[in-house]
Image (tube, rainbow, N blue to C red; front, side):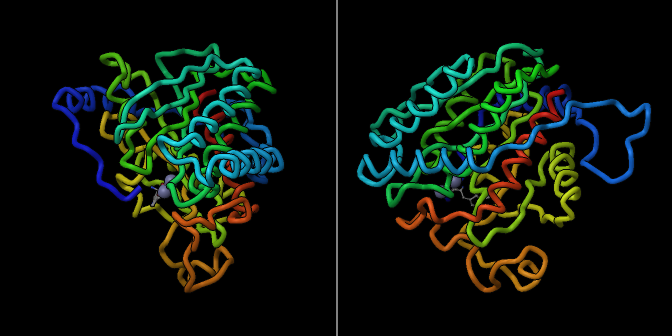
Length: 324
Ligand code: DTR
Ligand code: ZN
Ligand code: ZN
C-alpha cells in the first residue's frame, strides 16, 4: 500500500494518550535462545514451538490455487479475496478458534476482515498478530501478502495444536483492502467499542516477510516489541535493521494512531539491496528486495524459503513471548 493513512479523531487521540499510559508496559518473555543456561530465578516463559515452514508453504500454495481459480488475483472486491477468507476461516473454525468476519465497504465493493480469537486468557490484555490477506489486482500476491497471512495462520494453528494457554488473550486477524489504503484495519480500529483499543497490549504486523532477495527489517515503533524480535534474530546471529520506510504503509498504522504498541517484520519491497546488506544477509546487491512487488510474477515461486522459515518462527517467538 502506498497511500497515506487517514487522520484520526480527537477522541482517538484521547484514547491514544490513555492507551500509552496503560499499555506501553508490554511484558516480554525470557530472552532469545542463548548458549549460557538461564539464571535459576529467571521467569520461565513458555518457549515457542517451531513453526513448520512446510505447512506455511502449503498455505501459500493454497492461496496461489485460489488466485488461479479466480482470475489470477485475490484483490479487494474480487471472488479470489472472498475465497481466501473462506479458506482460512474453515481451517481456523476446525482448529477451535472463535472466528468472525467483519464486513465493510470500500470503493463500492464489500470487504472482509477475518478475526480469530483463541478462547481463554485475560481479554483486558489482548495480544494481536495480523496480516493483510488481499493482493493487488495485478497478481496472486504471494509474498505481498500471502507470506504474512500464511505465517500468522500457521502460528494460530500451532497455538491450537499445542493447546497453548497463555496468560493474555490471543487474537489473530487477516485484513481486507490494505492495498487501497489500510481500509480493513482502519475499519477494525475505528469500530472498536470505546476504550477497547487500550485492551490491546500489542499489535504485531506481518506484511511481506519472504521477499526473494530478503532483508531483515524490524519495525522500530514500540521498543519492547522491537527488542523481542531483535532478541530472536540475535539468537540466530542475524543483524537486523530498523524498518524506517514502513511508517504508515501497512496495517500497524491505524493501531499505532490509536495508541496501541505496535511492531512487526518486513523483508523489503521495490527498493534495492545495498552491498553492505548483501554482505550481512546474502542475496544480490543492486537488485530489489522483491522485483515482483505488485506484479503478476508475485507467485508461489516468488519467495525466499529461508526468510519465510525464520520469520514464521519469529512470529511464534513474539506471540508466545508477549502473551505468556
Ligand atoms: N505496504 C506494503 C508494502 C510495504 C512497503 N514498505 C513497507 C514497510 C513495512 C511494511 C510493508 C511495506 C504493501 O502491501 O504494498
Ligand atoms: Zn502491496
Ligand atoms: Zn503488503
